[in-house]
Image (cartoon, rainbow, N blue to C red):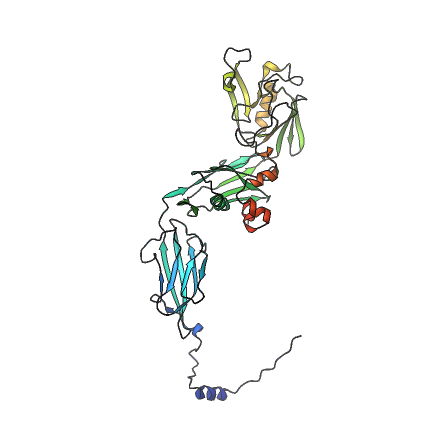
Length: 416
């Protein structure tokens, strides 16, 4: 319950008498409040160890601000040119402040120190300094290059140096930013010590905009390694195009945004050369390819050897699996599997397929006796890994399971 308090005005003469009785001086133009006075120059009262006055600081060492003239430090802020704050701690007696967060290499910093003397007067000192450049830089190259892709296209990050330590991986991963409009959840997965892939639980939304960037520049990774500059990329997705091949039924269904737009009789891999099951992502399109059996290990001169001119070839693995025109097998298309692993169709259907798909679109094979497409070593089989397993490949996986804040850095956010 609140109560109103009535304040009685005090006569001005009474205020003057009280001031005189206390030996104070009253003035309309001054103030007895130290906080209202202009701060004094505290240059002689504080010292920044190892930096300032033209000296460059070692980024591997913490900052240390000390009170040298008998005053006490009340506050310290240290920021780089991008406005990022350096974390730090102030001793209880105000004699010393030291940084607890890492400095960036090759960066400019501004340190603002506030002090207080024995009478409560406030002092200020501002110190600017640079840090030494790094001897070793970790750079990241994002892929694919900016452009429009299918909804199955993963994002890749290739590092210039291997990173194996889990703590160092977490530092790197927190700086890799992926923002999508519309926003969907996603996560990075460490393929090896130098390669990361990023994807959502399901395919990207159709007609999305995806911005990929890094804030790694100057960040201490560990072991004398610091982050370098990187080039951002912007991707957009087209329609959701999926080609689903039923190897047992010998037909491919091409779907656009969930609706079938063409059914194509096909032939896939014969016994001993069964086509891989699972989701593959289109890697490229080649209007003409010369295909040789020797490229997949078939000895020249054997009964299975071949050397053929192939048209309208859409690549789905680096080892040479395509969707392509196969006029020599039209009698088997829709009825039997006679290829060496590729998906063959008539020249007309292959040309139509070639013209209606793009890099990043999805080619899924079901009903084959072949093994499932591997996630990483022969193209983009990323979608064949269950989402739970995918997330465990993140260096921030522990934080995600516990629901801590670092997990947020691996999520897609809408652009503002």
